[in-house]
Image 1 (spheres, each protein chain N blue to C red):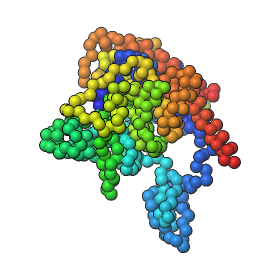
Image 2 (image 1 turned 180 degrees about the vertical axis):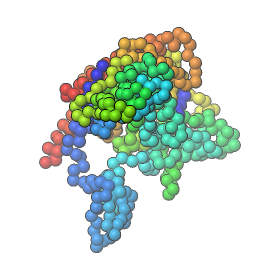
Image 3 (image 1 turned 45 degrees about the vertical axis):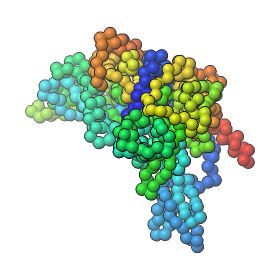
Image 4 (image 1 turned 120 degrees about the horizontal axis):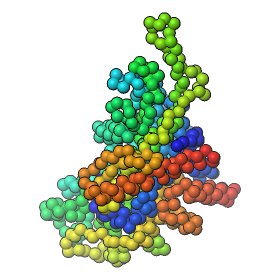
Length: 283
Length: 316
């Protein structure tokens, strides 16, 4: 809930290019990220953008591929709101919100029905075509929500996938040719493969406040926004997906402006996250 | 692309760790943790207060906090809790509902506070009877979502908080921003309304953790000069939002970020600490947005550690 005067104050700030916390329309709040935060899973990351705090984990296990795509590995996404992350996160509404987020993230990464395209090479996850493949369970947990939750989650998931180690699996033919071949997993934890996360996009939420596009909205600013656009952009600045949220429409010229803003901002954001995590390492 | 693994804590936590190493201002006082046994004088007997429980005649703490004792009554005041109202507190809250003869106000307390129609100033004098018409026009006074400043008038046994805005220094807040901090960080003081002259910023430090920061509005302060009792408008009007220059707005952002930084480091929030933080940023020649970045947070944490060490030296 928000008062009309706060809305006016925020809108005037966007017009002057000076937001309530002193940022410009195209600057992000400080981002910090650390990876490998949990021992129990194959890859994990913890990320903060301003007051927004999320954790992402990837668990790798052997499973069966879907009949439609016998040559490919599988992905599953789930997002949870911690009940104390935001007042709206409790109960049914929180469930709706988190499944919406999970879907948006999945769409930005998952390949088409045929298994081709997409941001992850799922073919490399195949162990025994039609029988066994690696299944990646990607989970996001929102510990504190202060706007731009999807941005934080997409960054954290990218970082967690980059941290994921997949054990080496080799197919050994059974002694009796009639039997199923066996799958042998290398017990040495120092031997593993990494995922190629180069193509995984980051999803940016661009809000329209007082008719002007603004990146990295705080929770307060999200309440003031007339419209929101979630744009998935990869490292090269190419757009991989767009979804719209909130009620009011966006005219084509503004839409172009918002997309251009996302394309400019995404590589910068990715760089700053990389810098933040490498700084922590040297410190 | 490589997010590199560091295995260390996140940036902000590292600053908090710096503070945790510093001498504590509460060293000798009774700090207890959940389940800690609290010593009681057996001969005198004791009364169990808030934040404690008794097993077999022995008193234990049920929350982390500071031990307090008033005669026989022993209680533990938690380090962090939702806002616990006291009569006379200046608060900044949000109107969530307009109900019959009252507004419901969210103070981030355990329950919503009530502001009665009879506890606000209406045009035509304080002594005026509240009519049915006033009740129908309540949304002209405050509507849902409005931020207001008010004073805690009374507290009831069931936890109900009653507010009043019977002075023109209280009321609807227009032209500024709200910063929310944990209520435990706010220090109760003589004055909660501040005009920071060198910055040209008005600030209300609500005891409930709501801090209102806005560029100084000369028009409004002329109204409140007489202590807020003389002004009476003939009819209710919706105030217009004043327009601010980027300079004014930047200064307000500076003050707001000072409050945010103090909350990040979990340091007390009051006008002196806020002004000191603004000064520190100014000395380093930092812009408003830079005040939320790691170098400045680290700088503040180190400054606080130094201050506490000096205090400790003086105490010795």
